[in-house]
Length: 338
Image 1: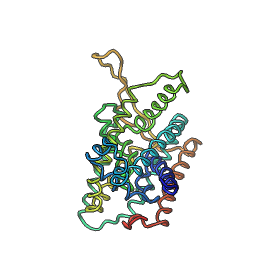
Image 2: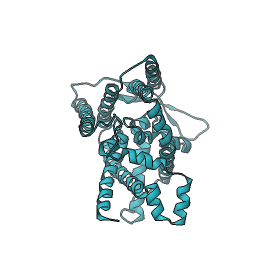
Image 3: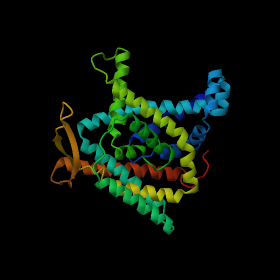
Image 4: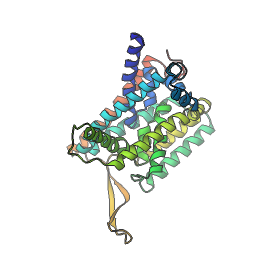
């Protein structure tokens, strides 16, 4: 490989870390970051080309064919960047979650509101059909907001589905896969707790820290989630690309309605209303989440003032990223990347 190619792969690796980090932040789309940094179209086309033939080529050990026909070095570099970002970002998020969940969700809330406003600005209503799908998305979001909260679910099949759904953030610019995981109740389980458990396993395996007990159930959950993400990336690339190309406005209006109606779900100021339910078929009592008690921030409390400030910071970051992308290139025009 030439030095220039090595340099290009290094730059791609750094861009992939940025994209992977964006995938973990609700409100920021990894696909949007890929567009802004200039490798989105090549990434989608490369993943769309993956089929059963690639495994036959890999078994034969035909490296040149893998590089030439399947852009394998490009794909491996992207996947490595995503993996690195998940480890580093996960530890940072875990630290701030323990420090103050209110502040973390406030920061995310500002990001999501900004993303929603950008989507609204870039997708004007043109006809009754688009209005209809906007209303459908809005109703779905509102129903979810006032329904019994979706609790963390460690069912293996559900985790696999979460992996498929979350990858939409890489495929559709403007959609946040992490936001979808929040709505599904598994954001912290899949993007923080399970990743941190893998770090513990790594430290234990290499003798860095032998004092911590590893939860292998969370490791299994992470493996299933990763498999779901990989399957979703390959299978949904074609489907979602088709929907965006053929029905872009309708798809975006459905998304706008859904996100708008779902804002109450991630409102930072809420308390979980819990009751202990005795289950005579089990030894232990169960804590049953019946609903959320939402309340308004109290500006006389310094903690709420800080949280409001973090909403503004999250809002400003997303707007800056978007404005930077618009200045660099018109990412929504479909203009071919260089």
